[in-house]
Amino acid sequence: MTNKKKKLNPKAQHYQAIQKKNETKRPIFTNCLKAFFVGGFVCFIGQLISTFYIYFFDFTEQTAGNPTVATLIIITMFLTGFGVYDHIGQFAGAGTAVPVTGFANAVISSAIEHRTEGYILGVGTNMLKLAGPVIVYGVFSAFIIALIKTIFSQFLGS
Image (tube, rainbow, N blue to C red; front, side, top):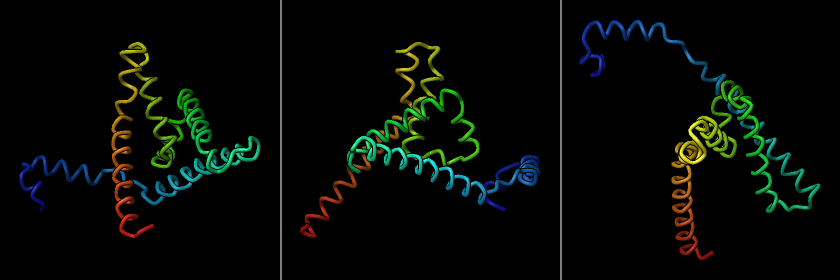
């Protein structure tokens, strides 16, 4: 027995045993495959959009990134607004958390959820509650990586 079970009374231990026996087993391998293929498909769509901008609008590989990201955000906005992204998320799980689309979905879902409270106190104050920590830790991580790269490039002389 673990330390946690020793602290529980016999009824609670019995309940936990029944709960564990009846718990639905998650198909981990299937979920991983779904996430892999749906996430890969989202990235494939992003690559198609990028190639479209390069081919039809004379962008370079370097400059096609920003319009590609903006297009993915707009697509995610419409899919979230019409409730389609939620169904894709239910099916694919983590596969829809590809950084750009997952972040856009988090912000837009929150904005939609709080729209009845008004634009300032509802949408404005609540839409970045979930996404705010992502921004903070993303910027902080980028700073740390850039600092490490700078230090290593000084020592390696490149």
